[in-house]
Image (spheres, rainbow, N blue to C red):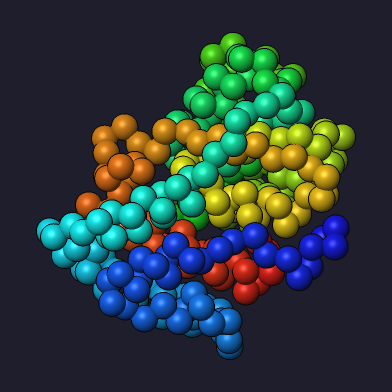
Length: 249
């Protein structure tokens, strides 16, 4: 779209450095994925178990190089911008309310007149309220008027969030020439890369991270110290690689 068909917005140098530091094969990120992308994803997920094991081992004898690699990963995935006045605050849905909490604060600061939420119902929780509906309910309870909010509730992936969200905004006649993106730090790079693929070249995006969790284990300071955090971060890179192969980021 918009002349970006052959342009991709993700870099894999930080995950390659991570794998090299652990002594693991990094070809899944340095070579084009060929054949069935789902098969490639499965191979990457098998590698994920080795990444967990080796990273936890590396924690026991932390070197300066390992510390630098871990720091570079957090800096890359969670890179942020100075939030500036925008048309819309675009919020990526999640089971947690942390993202909408951050978006409401930005709205209260007057950084944008509109909050737009994109988030559907996880496939493993059929029948529940959509993430977008939960976010809208929270925002209304915080004093955001209904006319300052719109949403897309049919998304189950970042690509669905972006494409479906932008389509809905077009239907509503909402401007997104300047847009604040709100999501968790670990999902920010993938969310930004996908959004960049589908907005006009002149669009300005400002990345703002919400808190990632309140109990630890998935923050920029401790994700590499537990299995869940390591898998989550490694899978972010896998998802970006598959998205690139599908030409959606």
